Amino acid sequence: MTDTTPAYTGPERVFSGIQPTGSLHLGNYLGALKKFVDLQDTHDCVFCVVDLHAITMPVEKGVLADQTRQIAAAFMACGIDPAKSVMYAQSSVPAHVELAWIFNCVARMGWVERMTQFKDKAGKDSERASVGLFTYPVLQAADILAYKATHVPVGEDQKQHLELSRDIADRFNREYDVPGFFPLPEPLIKGPGARIMSLKDGTKKMSKSDPSDLSRINLVDDSDTIARKIRKATTDAGVIPETAEELKGRPEVENLVGIFAALTGRGVESILGEFAGQGFGAFKPALADVTVAHLAPITARYRDILADPAEIDRTLARGAQQANAIAAPIMDDVRRVVGFWRP
Ligand code: TYM
Image (cartoon, rainbow, N blue to C red; front, side):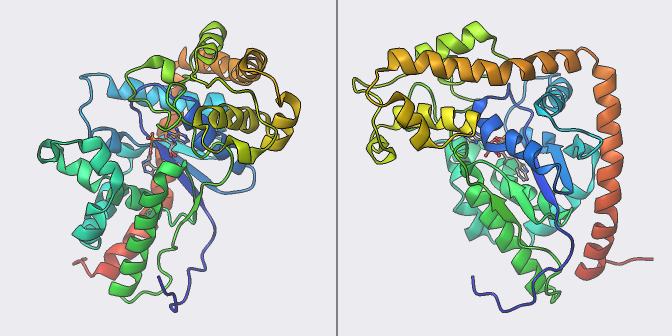
């Protein structure tokens, strides 16, 4: 994209969201949640439980509200402090839906048709997928831009959606001749946790929807389960190599070393230096220890927080008010720019 138009000069803001679909796993934690926590001390942050996105796929009757509370509890258990960051449920702020509609009329069919996540999620029978699943990334752009967010921490799988958000922001600014009105949001993807792979197949990402529970470490798994899953993780017949270069072509080993690095904050080379030449009989228990040490306090806090759902509800309600207060004046400007009738 060539950019000769004036850039956005407003304040920086971080926005990200997580769907309330199934339990969170180590990929969500390292790719997203851990980064949220790191950002909240330095940035103005808005974190959202994206329940409108969740209904783009079938949801079991009666579970959505509880799953929303669970994600909110997980946010706080990981270290999101509602006194520092805004935290709320997407459906409680109408701006998301209104801006998504406007963006549906800004985004081009061709742009949205290129999105690979729709193809993956819709599968072979895309005629039966919901229209919402198709426009999922347009709603995602609205989430971000309803707050004029400038930075978006996500895992690598969201890169394409973030590019679409930038294209939509840019096209809105040009089409309505309001240069710099919306920022072109920057994805924050880098780091060893950006793409955590399945423990059973190093070529597939760790995912909530994988039918095998052994493929992922859930944030609610207890210590024994975590150790067992790591023990059973697929590896190969080799030993731990000396250099990162030698990890290429060994996706399962690369993934386990990457998890070790992401959890400890150590470089991959330092971990290889410690374990080079050893088999997985030594490495896997060390990785299990590191994982358990990191996740056990989070799991304990999660259970405590979840024991008081009324307090979670109060926190989400406060968050919704704060989020509405940020989005409302932005939406007033959007309506004016689009040219809707106003009394
Ligand atoms: P969701 O709930 O599917 O994923 C939440 C976050 O977890 C990251 N993630 C991973 N990171 C590393 N390795 C993995 N194996 C892995 N699996 C998932 C995702 O990249 C994501 O950051 N579309 C978003 C939700 C959303 C959103 C937004 C995000 C809706 N609106 C606006 C940012 C801004 C999603 O993928 O949710």
